[in-house]
Image (tube, rainbow, N blue to C red; front, side, top):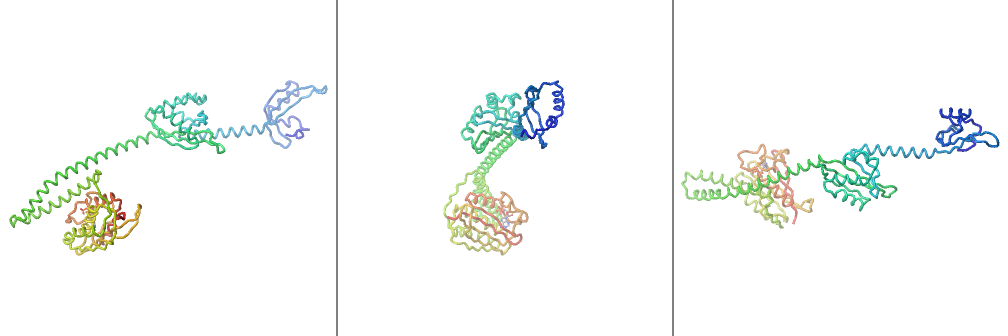
Length: 446
Ligand code: ADP
């Protein structure tokens, strides 16, 4: 502040505060002798208000009584203080407005700040907020964790890698769970401390634990079911094979009037045996007890074998089978691939119109894992509604509209799905109701 800007003006023009008016009156009347150091404001000639520290004293100068006023402009200091106070208030408001507990440490692990939520999570006494005693605070935190070394381990990680972010979930001794994250605090590119953020995740962890328990229980129930089914299937097959064997003998040697009944017994027995075989296969897959021998397989060979085995069934339904399969080589278990094709071709014949046809084709395709071969089994049959596509591959599901006189177990496609999955392939269906269906199997090429 320039001295000239004050010249020729009365003190009351310069010093405008109300209490100053009384003060100068007292000085003028000699009631007050002055003040050693007083903060206040003064107004410059241009009307600007400046913060000052002033000293007022009475002195005798050159034989005359004078009032000497000394001022020091502290406006800049005040502005800086104001800015600092605003930042502190903003920081405090931000710290308190988060739902997480926050702790700020410097690089020497000394407390810089923490919010009320942090104090609540660790049950800290209110006096710690003022004393900020690091030793007392750390002792409290250490005791709160279920593992006594958890806090020191976490501090060690922060100390080793101060510039990186860490996330972890830890158990508290009282049964609660905490997620914590540790992030660096930087100033002009330099790491100067660490910000620890804690949030309670007890509900989430309990939920996850309950889910894991439920999954384990379901897994063991599933394993028990598969073991039971596989044991039962063995028990059922032995007597059934005996029934079938003796029925065939009687068909040869028995009385002519019994032939028809014996044929019915044999067909029912064969159907039951097929069902047991499929249940056994499914149970083995679900129990993880199926051995696949995956190797390079000439597709034409397997397709020809499958056609030869399904031709009698196709003939029953007056269905013709055509194959146009290239000399593709696939990676598959040959016996299981034949079983898959038999299932698909049998279905294409069973769910067809009289005098319909089945076409088998192959082409190269690409799989997520590399090149593949797509094998299509297309029929001219009754078709499948799109909303039933997902149900098709579920065990024991026969979809609506399927003619009830057509024999089936509802297990064939479920087996196809699982076997293809085990061979790292895919199966999908395209269909138009009334026009026919196309099952597409994609396998890695060999
Ligand atoms: P199923 O032994 O009953 O044939 P699948 O698992 O092979 O058992 O097939 C399940 C159901 O899917 C069948 O019952 C039938 O309703 C339907 N389905 C399968 N293939 C075809 C097809 N090519 N055309 C129409 N429906 C089909």
